[in-house]
Length: 402
Image (cartoon, rainbow, N blue to C red; front, top):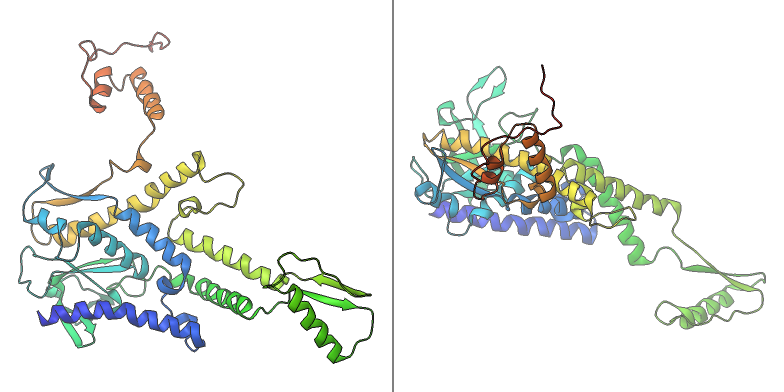
């Protein structure tokens, strides 16, 4: 119980440490951009990860046995309520969150686990996990189980907590540099994140100190320094930001006001941020309109937006969920010798559903081609069959081959 409390405390303190680190950097600039947590200090990384985990949590994880969905039993209850503080949606949301940030995630069965089906599942922070192994084969580290002498340690404020490999389910993305660990998906975007950070910082300094003047007062007369200061004070007192209120400016003879805009160098920062935004979204497989980004004159509603949301589910979320299924299948159900298995149910996801018109056109085409009968279509739609519906009637436009 003491070990469990130490781990829970470390998970809470981690967010506080990272928040303090980010605050310190914003205040005095001592910490470099490379040391910052991108999820905490980079807006679009935070947005992209939250889009992913929100959608992952929409898919229900079903326990299946002999082709039938289970709605009771020990395995069902474990995934319905992994632990007293976590719901079934939190389990997959947090798993996907660490996967998106670190390329790996850890399920821990708790300090009371002694084998067999676990009673609880906890999500551990991969940044605090480290491993030791005594087995190396052809230079590849093997941490698949305790039989391979692989030990894990979870670093807490109270010290390192040893965890056996049999007490874990390790989700990890392919890592060419370390086969025992996942790889941070943002590792190849280090320069983009650093550029974006410094661009944000430069823009903040620009706005904070009002580094670019609103305009220049020009005159064809020679004026002394004290006269220039007096003219500046008069202008600010009458037409400054706080006092202007669209007043009419009255200038002396030979004096003109020339407004200034951002320099080309400043404008390049905005273009750089736009490029980095699309790079981050592409890395996470998020189409722009799924993130409510629209650079065109068209609205965010319409066929293009619908297609992008469908593509997001087909090519990003669905493959990710299938990967999670395979990992849980091999590292949980098969490893524990269970007859059950787990699958994500995507039937109720609107983005993956065909419109009624598209479905009808497809059904008609398959009926005309002889691939289906009328009753086949009715059964798929949950409707009563017709007495004559099992007979296929060849379309008169179809000419049989001789």
